[in-house]
Length: 358
Image (cartoon, rainbow, N blue to C red):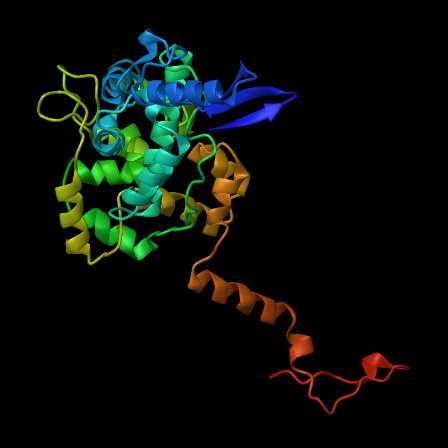
């Protein structure tokens, strides 16, 4: 904010709550320009500036409730786990604020405070939620301005964790617990489906004749088809179909399962597996395919990835497979490795020297 003179006229310069720069021509009196600027500053502090429409004076908490009701609960089946904790953090920090009062510098302060108690990745999830909220507020006519999160830098994340099980560990895990967890794990290990996708799987989504699973609601929003192998088909055919629910794995109320944390934790303890999450069953599916020589583009399609970049994390081999690879190289090239240093192959007759085979 300030006052400047141009061609004998004084101007005042300040910023509106929506980050838009505002200039006003006052006249030849510097004293008048100072008075008008003081008045504008007071109006901004009291939220009475004429450019702030009354119908856009919406509290953040009020909009967050509207956003949850209209958008999140209708489109995100796992919102209680994935969205609600982050929304609570946003509501706590921006309590009492109008949407137009949330500026980039305030978002930066939230970023700093949030990172004191949670990981950078969790902080990024909050920032992403806030950014999406403001995008919706603009589309819905609830906010008139630039998205305050647009130019805020997110933390860099390490997304290359790939924890997977070897075949022996898979066998132990499947033997460690009964139904329905065992069947759920078999489906996860043989299809790469996410936990929420399995929980919301309905009988109408299964085509036993064509041996195909149709995943209607996915993380990316695109329906995809997954082939069933013998293990999945046999497992699903053994699941008892309940007449009062369309879901394959319902809870006692007939609704989709929502939490198997306790039973899965018990299964891990019994099988002696540590540092492992249910989502790592999906990593195991992709890793075992990769180690079996399946093309990465096929793995990408099965996993439902939008780009090959996400699938490249599985372009790795276990230590055992690496040893097999180098041993194979040695067998193919053993003629070269077994030549003694003193043996010099004649340029005129290179075949005259026989290699020493160890």
